Length: 338
Image 1 (cartoon, helix red, strand yellow):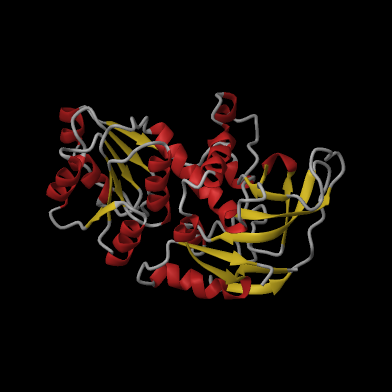
Image 2 (image 1 turned 30 degrees about the vertical axis):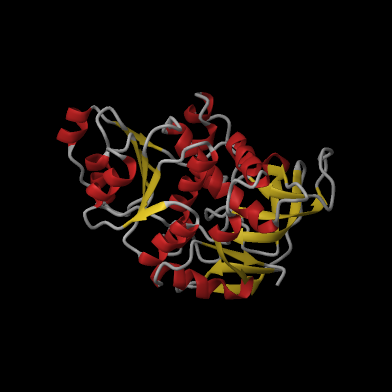
């Protein structure tokens, strides 16, 4: 089968690798769509991910073959995939937080050890499967996993639908956080991004979108006051500090961006305003189910979130564009069937 792999020079190669075979409790999926995530972009230059690794964890596809002991699924069923199997025995799993299993780097799809979805076929444990309704597209099925991560942040932020909310960053996760907020009933949402193309995209989706210039006044003008909750989704080193400065007293700051260097924020402001600082990573299987429910109900503008569906052969081009481009793309998905 064809797969997009990390090359020795840390570029993307399209090569032929052996077809995987499902074992007991596993199924083989013929991949329909595999989204490129920000974590994939970071992984390309992370030595933990060896050359030859197949990335990709935002996957939809069709069951192609069943391993032994799999009785509740059928060949030909369309599915979306959860991203990994928790180990079940680490202290985090035992404490009921298996979505952030301490051993997830060894078990999650496309993280350097287990093959990911940027290939024609992928073998996964049957517990990762979520059925795709007939009226949910392949593109939407691939969007479900990152949307579930956005939902997880909204859940952790305990967002009351009546309060004002700011989302910093209109990249894929920021855009999906805004959509998740609206799907859950929030209407007073302002998205902040310096990129005019991304602001335009958010405006097209019906959100108030403002620049960084005089951002405090712009946000207060749209919301009629300071936001009760601020989501940091950009990963920029200055954004956590901005989130703290924007948040109202007794508010919450949810950190979902992943900066590649330490960040600075005013602890004085955190203390004086009694802010809650919350980290949010990953998602739970039930949140992926919720994502699919919102998608099926038409509450998520999938066609606007997915900028491009490209053949697998063009993976290298889009990795480069997402890393060094002008930000015009929100979500790029690869189609191994093309």
